[in-house]
Length: 317
Image (cartoon, rainbow, N blue to C red; front, side, top):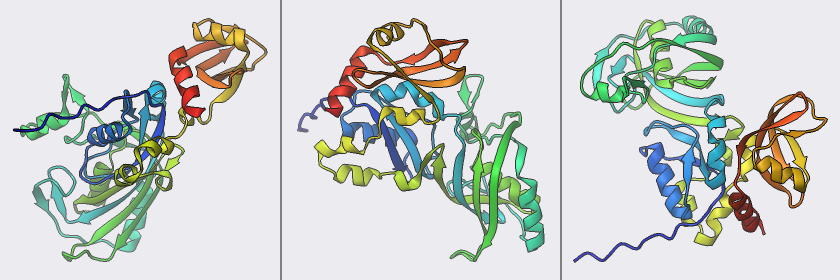
């Protein structure tokens, strides 16, 4: 007879965990594992990584989930390896081989192709993606053997470095791709499109996100390292909630104005217009939420609740 499962006692946890997502784990599975290790009540992430990708995955807990949306639009940087001459159904090593082509290009052709993909380009999202069509994820259609028409999307490649590497252990020629790009860029598709421009095909054998917005891989902790910490020390791995508000102008309010602001009431002051503002209370010093300023008015955006603010202050005590 199986012993009854021990129920995890959840608690309010607030902050940002920069996780180095492991290979083979979905973003949601990684989130649920971290949530369990921290015994957190509420958690979310700032955009997913493929199960076969590793790297920077910011996880938001408690009050930080209110600002996770801000980082969906952040630029991201990746490192990838594309195996040339072999195309798969998923554009990565998990799929079935659906085409094979010879590989023949010069260093000069590779350099020209690299320049071709810099700046604003159009990209057709892959079938194996979470994008929705008639309320259904594209990967559901793909798994059923159905291909649906997808409109191309405008993306921006800010920086791109493509180098041919030594042949891998199977004797296959490969490209190493380093890219910094706008949101919505599919690196699997980029690898395929670069190979197509070189007159061949390709699939990714490795993909790692090394930066998203201001966060890079060197700041991250792995699930194994988080689990190895004493339970009382795990929350120390979290960054403050306002880590998500880098680039916001700070405004500090007195006690009376803080209370009114938290009630959703606009405040007037001599502030210059500002699209993105992080608002703090003066006594005690605490994040209240976000706002924007127009014509001297501080207009509330996403606000923390008094309970959340008190919980954050208690955790810092």
